[in-house]
Length: 512
Image (cartoon, rainbow, N blue to C red; front, side, top):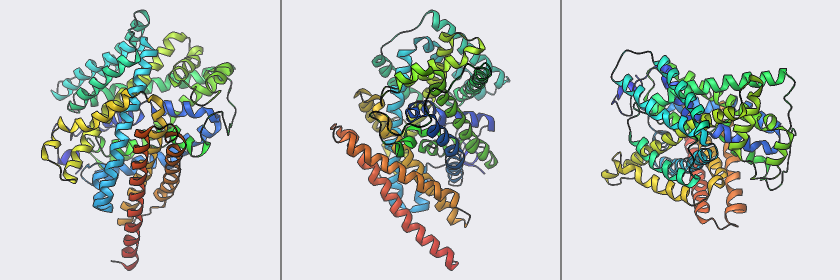
């Protein structure tokens, strides 16, 4: 019996059909990160990013996602930090809570900036993204009230309305400053995180799942049409080891690509809302491993917008030095050039791709704020804090306060390397947790242990480099503090795991 069936409460634990869960999981893990990461990483050329996205997705990312989901299913759908207590003990759980909390606030702050940037730069995409909210609520109510209707058809109609609003947006764009959008998004995320999962999150993820499939099909057809017409050329060099101002290609390629290959954020989704919706354990492979493969494919498409879609002049302009790659323009405008052979005008193509990126970023924003609340509420019990802090509204406050601080401090995309390193540290720790779980079952675990070693060394090196060579010289004390705390907590979990590992191996070898 899965947690969704066992603890069905109509709010967090909601048994749901496989396709709906897959849509929720896919769009929650995808967000804008597999677009942003590969686009920014194109500064090192097309080959390193392509290899890492493809090989990383297959042998690390999808393995990580499937493992985190299964371990959570076997621990009552509890969050990764919470179930770590069973695997590594109380101290490991407490340290992991700190890592998870800071990753969540960093994800939220980064995606507030991402969405605000998209909205300000592509006002034609605004109506389409925001009309999706009432459409999702309507579908959620129809499902909840058990009205007889075709869910797939209703979702297709919702997507069609969204695309109609793209055309309306090109005629009457809604223009606000980036700062105004930041304030709007901060208010929105609190409201969205407080709603039941069936009212907004699930139905919007169904819509976004269909939208993403449409986007991937259109982009794939566009790439093939461009190639067959002889118009597409790879304009980026295969490898650039030392672009101006860029950090070292290793380990920063990995943390920059982030969710395009492997992501600790996915272990939060896989131990957050997703296991609370799965009706059968058999669905875990399709939902966990399969969704990550699809995300890796999205990462490849994003990379193509930079190394093919921009053209030689565009690539040289955006990638002349680190920090010049304006990813919204690269994704939307470079992607629009890939769609030209299909007869799609550049202005509509750019708005369409901006809607895709913003829709998924909004889903991530919803999920991140919800997970921040859940993680803090779980930690109330762990750290024996006052029971009032467990309230669904009160538990939003601590994380939201830090998110507001980061979002309004003007860090913007400067948070991306810190987010990426923290994200990959959590991915490494999730792989480690799955390894320990497999050891306890006396099952093969090497396919988790090797990815753990790769990710923990790379991500902790990147975090240490960022703190020492970037944040300290710039006196960004808040980022120094977050980086140091995450590094020490991650190191602490690894040390505890090694000790626990040795004890488990001893028991296995002695047959205890």
